[in-house]
Length: 394
Image (cartoon, rainbow, N blue to C red; front, side):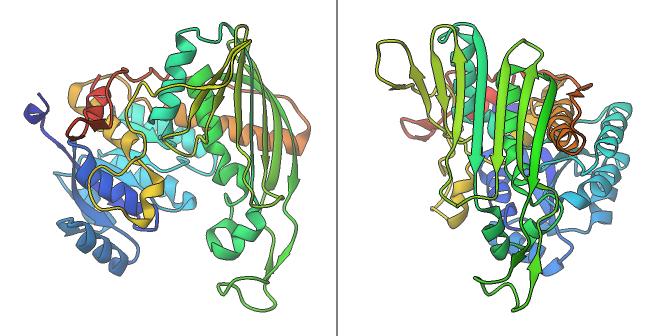
């Protein structure tokens, strides 16, 4: 059946580190995407990626916008460039899937959503780890009632984001604080599993001023402060009645401690890192030991298409773009990592920031729905690659 479907001609804009896994997967993992071109502000970087992955063309942004064959643009540029590039591509009639987030400003993101609707185009947003085996399996178990009625949820991640800023100049810029760099994966997972967040209150703390001291990428005498809150703690009220708590702490040590627990009237479900595709799903019931549950879905993050590479840890990045490509071809009304999903992620995360600044309770205005993928399709089969892409078709 797949062979009868015309592939979606795709271009990637942005050839930084994350492009490695996107380009490989869009080129080799997913049947539905035909990666025809790459683009970067540095033509040398684009040419290097095109040569390494066997992509036919290096194009400019203008050439992509003017191309009659390119239907889908995957935007992997830095966050501050997202609004301008997405807006340009939507005006050019292209469907767009973007790395997190759609824009750095909620009003700009809302403008992009309105433009996509007006022009009847698909607009999707990472994080697409919500389509991985770990979180889709967790959704399946929760929907099946294995822990009864869900009562509350607790998530936490810690990291020495200040130390990490020594290694990456991007972390020193807007959006580099831990809640924005990593917290969005937890927000995305929370709302995919439990639905929209109706209101929240939050507290925050900034990062300390950091003098250069460890790594060669900084110069003696340099110092900086990561913009925004590097710690955010929030109380969440879900529309469903579930109560949640969130803690993102980037002012501690790099011994990461992930905590993702969903509490119910019959049991507790413990989830792995939502920044991965293969986080374990562990069930705790009264009078029983903890039990790791089997995955019910594919996209477990394993490299099934070529030799192991250094960036394999990014897993199945691009699955959100592929799922959107299937929606384009089949005429399905909405893709799962939709603009509504991305907009709600943004509103919640920026609402936490605003609440921490003002002390006010934030009531959200956006809503969305993410249908689960069909279970029973897996990344690995008896002869190697499995049939996981079939779960993206419906």
